[in-house]
Length: 74
Image 1 (cartoon, rainbow, N blue to C red):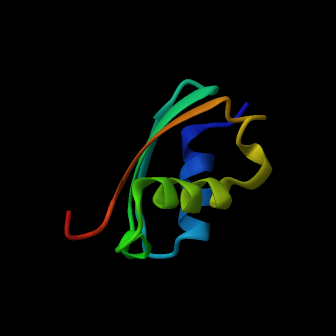
Image 2: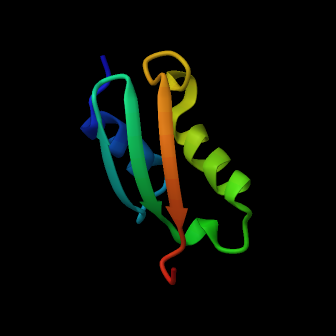
């Protein structure tokens, strides 16, 4: 079972310099990710960037992830 801290670390490794907070119960999670990489990208593109950092964990160990993505200026 995944823990919020593991997801946080995976996102931080995939998006160096991002500010990340993750909460959850082991199956369903909520994450807020603030990263400069999101500038000029649509919300869908921002979420895809985060999903890529999680690789095969999405849909398997991570059953649901609610994302809030922001640029540092937001």
